[in-house]
Length: 391
Image 1 (cartoon, helix red, strand yellow):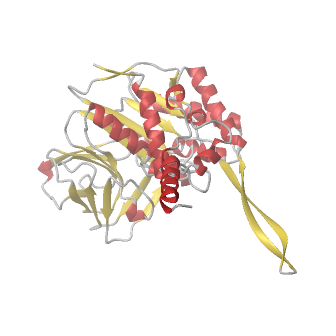
Image 2: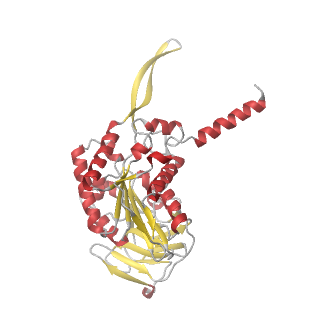
Image 3: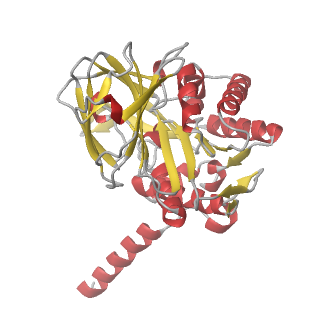
């Protein structure tokens, strides 16, 4: 074959594969049971909290929604900061953290009964003099900082070794301290434990009007994990969100949970959300994506005249993902709650295979690639735009 023709075919093949979209943008990007959401960023900040599992912890799906909204309505900051790297787990790429200390942590996925994991779905234990450095890359403007932590001392944590208590005021809540710094700090700052404390999370905003988007996610998390942490809901109340987005259900779909039990958990979770948010707060649930379960089998194959055993890995569509999706929709319709049907948006049953083949989903047939999560973010943003009205 002519070299020029061969090269052209290769370029076309790569281009088609790169731009192939496994969904329809116009027909499927809708929010069901939709209500008009008024967003007024000319005088104040519009706060969004996105709660979820591993699909949210890395902040690729939610991060794309954030960037789209902030380009449209203004950037009020990054929202929630937490030192994921310091506890050896993945986190957003919008900021970096570092610590010379080996730090212990608790995670919400271990909450099988009542636990004290707060707003970040993780917490980190800070011995006296422990330090963690933060560098916000997404928003390099000076930041307003609020700390949420547990300790016996009100002034247990300082920023940039600032021992002057006049620079911040601390409020003692029922189960934690809330320290609000009056002056902005650089986007590159360090927190230090003046005494033993447990850091729940750091709230950050740049002081501008616009959208402030808090991402809360934990690998492996379920609705019941969140239900078992009253501290999470107590601290969520401090954020005073205008919109809460909930992306849970994937881990339930690969578990043995009964559907009626999941429905009851959904009801309890919704009631707790309503209890800590204002009457004007809006809630949107997203359904879990289609996924496949990995199976293994041993086959016997004759190789060079000898029979040998080989392990074979294959994937089978997980029908429970659809059942969990249907249960969420049933609940939302019964309570007139808004939802975005990711399961249907991505193509419905067995569509995960298409996403994997097009490079939008990972080989585990559960998670997505960076481009896949960003595609979801664009689709959700498109759906949200249809119900947002600018005041």
